[in-house]
Length: 132
Ligand code: 5GP
Ligand code: ZN
Image (cartoon, rainbow, N blue to C red):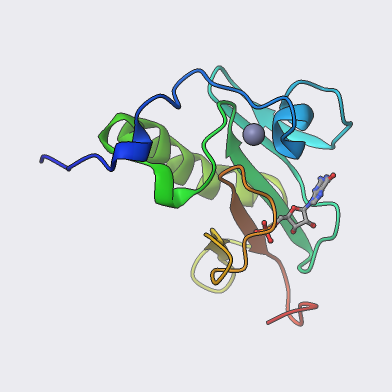
């Protein structure tokens, strides 16, 4: 498989932004309830959960959004997807198919993105949720 890289995909590997909220959380400058971390991925609870289980998965490097990823990020994104399922169960989501979970990555203003560091919301747990 070959994917074409958007121009903005270059230059983001290894980069952090000192003014970015989520970069500060990764660096420990702002406290968070950490779920998981490894060399490239950081996972923490959302400060305003709208489901019984609600955590955020982010790359440790500063990638502004899903609109900025390219071929260089395929492995990272794949690992985040695989990890989402494992951590959802660990954090209290019920098993598929009666349980399950939802992934969401708001991208850009019209996508509802407020924090411009790529993140995947993982939500689950018994209904009702604050937002459906
Ligand atoms: P977005 O709307 O950009 O997809 O979502 C950003 C998410 O980050 C929101 O759900 C919001 O509650 C969460 N958030 C914003 N500031 C903080 C913070 O300081 N700590 C944590 N843990 N979550 C935050
Ligand atoms: Zn950042």
